[in-house]
Amino acid sequence: MAAKLGLAEARAVVDAMLKAAAERKLTMAAAVVDPGGEIIHLARMDGGSALNSRMCVNKGYTAVKWLQNTKALKSRLFDMSLGDDRRDITWFGDPRYTAVWGGILLKAPDGTVLGALGESGGTPAQDEEIGQIGAKAFAEL
Image 1 (cartoon, rainbow, N blue to C red):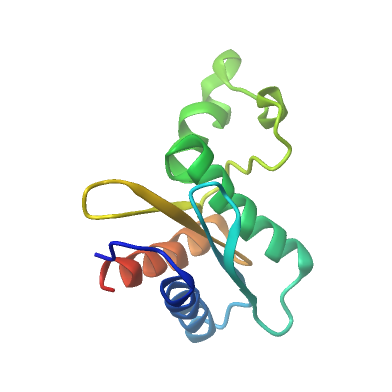
Image 2 (tube, rainbow, N blue to C red):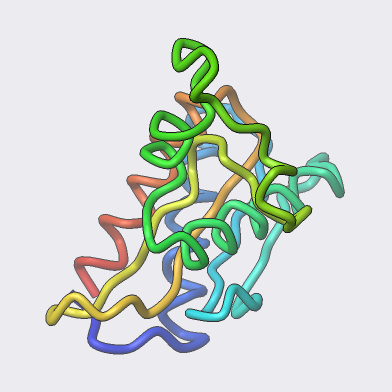
């Protein structure tokens, strides 16, 4: 597992995600953000939308701000099955929060959060799958 998250590592993660997306005939954007949620690297495939770019960055941003993967966050706070205990994302006061699958924390071997990744362009399950490929690529650096 990588002990740092700089431009080289971020590019490797984004490249792994976009390669996997292309193999699945998906058109996506992918990003890696630092522990403050700021972009280290972002790439959008030909045909990808500006919305995909914003969403992938915001997924990573949300993961680092909440210190958890967005899939778990969505289940914990925003799932419709929670009834009256469910929250609207605007309730938390940050319009960048994006509690949808695909924001995944990237950690050092000691558990320190180094940043997060995000991707957008597929279904929630496809986004999560591509994100897990990126997380695996980071772990193998």
